[in-house]
Image 1 (cartoon, rainbow, N blue to C red):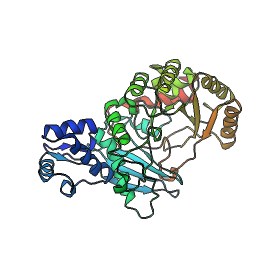
Image 2: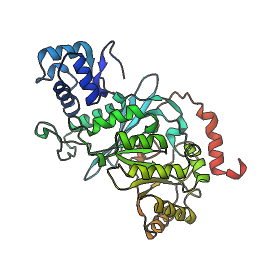
Image 3: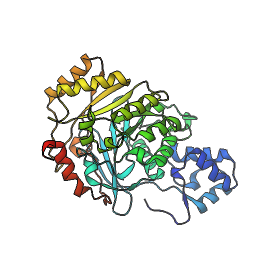
Length: 387
């Protein structure tokens, strides 16, 4: 994203921030709401075309503000309709965003960081390391670009209007947003929450809290903060039912072990828009797919109201890990269901363009020396007795 000298990029300002900025320019708060509708609902980036704004205000905006959106450097379309965009975010860093169309909804998977610091050995992003957090404008800019680009496509599936003043706003194409792209959202907390507030604001995207999901690997203090600041649907990247295995699969578990994570999930449920937490569980052959692992997950289900979402592992170049076979996944899911746990198996989408879960990898100038640590992490995971 390029920056305009001395101009404020207002794309990433939520309503309160924009009202404060507009007030500094000597205008009343309702101007900020008008401006939000032009930017986020109509996709307008040219201030001169915002015809219901006062001429003097439009001139102020031209002189002092900008709307700087992300521009894709690459677009790929899957045979199943999934679309993946690669966005340049400067300094030789790129991020990926994925749109997944379905009959009853359109889901956008958004990135929150250029890379990721968590370093899970089964994740393509984790292998790339980390460069920086994305700004709120870069996060919401992915939705801004996807929504208004897709609206212009004649065959796009529109979702019903449920925004304020919906009669003058095109029906949405993106009905659901999941913060499941590159990065750990809760390690970029302030920018992510600002973007979430824009997603939920009736003057912006007007999404329901139930249709916006933050996925976390288990940053316990930030889960508690999110419950107070902006509770949306919560998904937790669990991937292991005990601390010993999770320490190897999700290194963050060493800092926030399972009992702390499960306690934070229960606290979150007091504020959540859904009455359950989604536990994401990638199925890795011979590692976390045994009957005893299913039994341990059932013990977790007794502690937290939850749903298990089993994710067939999507390999990427260089990985030694393999997906559990279909028979094992089916048996594992059935064992959970028979034990009374709500269980789904995620349908793989976009794997032919490396857009499936765990495959997202832009182009990251790593500052964490992950390449030195990852071989050891993989060795510990695959051959713990030799580590």
